[in-house]
Length: 114
Image (cartoon, rainbow, N blue to C red):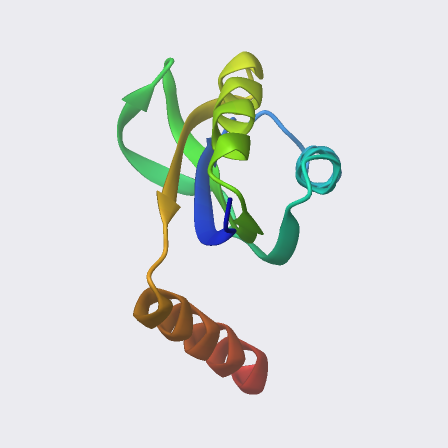
């Protein structure tokens, strides 16, 4: 089965410290590697106010991970994210080549502006 490019968006509990979020991302990258997936990029935001409360939290950290994987691995990833109580919400979407190029251009612009 062919690999496709995906983006995982996660809403993370504000109770996690930055180093705990890094650890969570490392665990996720290990899971991706174990399932023959390739990590491309991770983007983390600072704690932001939510539009509406989730599990009584009014703030959260957003984490976006772009990766290449086969479609069968997505079920494993969804199970892993739903089992972790520090991940308030998650969503995996398949990126088209145009969407991937747009994301890559944004990443390059962020790097250039820093």
